[in-house]
Amino acid sequence: MPAPYPSKKTAIITGVGSHRGIGRRLTSVLAADGWNLGLIARNQDQADELAAETAETYGVTAVGAGADLIDHDQAARAVEYITGRTPQLVALINSAGVSSPTGYLDVEPNEWRRVLTSNLDAVHWITQQAARILAKNGVGRIISLSSVSAHRGGGTYSKTPYSASKAGVEGLMRGIARELGRSGVTANSVAPGPVDTDMMGGTLTPERKAGMASDSVLDEIASPSDVAKLIRFLVSEHSALITGQTIHINGGLQMT
Image 1 (cartoon, rainbow, N blue to C red):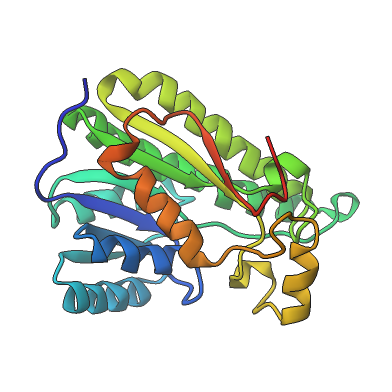
Image 2 (tube, rainbow, N blue to C red; image 1 turned 180 degrees about the vertical axis):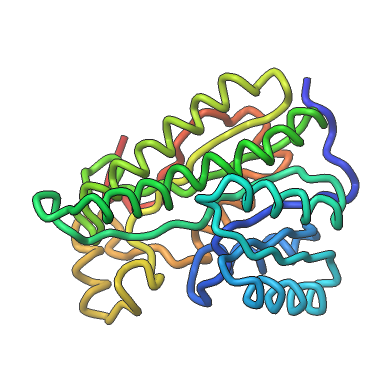
């Protein structure tokens, strides 16, 4: 049996630098629910600014940390810094990532490494650091952003390197779920279809949105708020029996 949630709990969110990103929207959604937050961006000033704004608006403890998570030592320092200044860590949400619209036959070594290290290695390093704490405390939730591209082989904006990296993230979450389940830790992936963020190559015009939604059965694409609200449930106590899963949110673009 996992340990109970503490009365004061903290979630770490990566990828909060983009003003239109899922990580930034999730910050507001979890803070409104009373979560204390560790907010990680590559830029320390961006993380600090969001932390100060979140603490003032929602009355929670919020701590910013600047780190490039492809670097093991920076990931370790970020987790240590945050957990030394916040209540018990209960959740980690890996929202950071990069896109890659380069066609497979044109992928150069540097592009392949950029995508795989940013989308898979970075998730591994920060997750390993957080998972040690969660397992020791006997309770925790780990959520990583995957993509419908991991299942369709691209077909929205990003192509093969991105699809490969996100498929790796899903395998990583399943492995963690199996290894750490008896320590009270769950691990899941969330696989959105197209989301109106800057990762889609900039703000989506109504025409691009309509084109991306045309293959779905609901004729619309997700907003960052849609994804954030799903994650809010997955990090809650109510999701205790959900682990090792990929949860799709794509309007029926991909059905499994």
